Image (cartoon, rainbow, N blue to C red; front, side, top):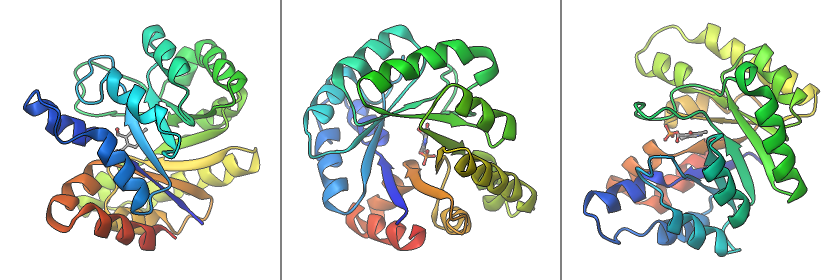
Amino acid sequence: MTRLGVNIDHIATIRNARGSTHPDPLVAAKSVIKFGANSVTIHLREDRRHIRDNDVIKICKNKKIPVNLEISLNNRILKIALKNKPNFICLVPENRKEITTEGGLNLFKYKNKVKQIILKFKIKKIRTSIFIDPNVKDVLMASDVKADCIELHTGKISNLIKQKKPYVHELKKIKKCCILAKKIGLEVHAGHGLDYKTSKILSKIKEIEEFNIGHFIIGESIFYGLKNIIKKFKRIIY
Ligand code: PXP
């Protein structure tokens, strides 16, 4: 069965808007799992714009919550991740000026560093994933650095679908990467910019074992409730 990971960064965004403690990302993490999600994703950014160190500590401490922690290659963030032992780790690029994670990790530039980081998590038996653009070269590189999984950046296809532009070329590219990844022993995840329609289209690719969705789920939950939205996404992706 395809898994659903829910990114709750934007619960922290709302909390931080008032510099207060509500809504609490820990409560969101517990709720998301109670409502049927398979894991919770949090991204500890270098600029701490949403999730903060204390959120990571509290959420990772609760062993009933399967946590997927997104981190950049920054050494300080890496130390925090290793100390808090999330269940899963996803390496992402980070750029101060970006609104969100705008592309996949540049594995050609950071190959050795990524390899070393992955080894550190493997020693702690933490599943590793790399957020990459859907290119064959990146898939092969992810295998070279011994990642367990790849997460394919679905931002481009999501934008094309939302703008009602032709998307079949991008879909074929994603499918090709999924087939190759599976063949060479990488587990395939997908995420970024996904909504009902884009998830439905991508769910036809059977090699994708996990979807990580954040902004749309949290936004839709304002109108229909987290429980209903998670149920709806589970029906879409299974
Ligand atoms: N996967 C990764 C690796 C991400 O960086 C993000 C955005 O933080 C997501 C999934 C979720 O993207 P969205 O919030 O657009 O659903």
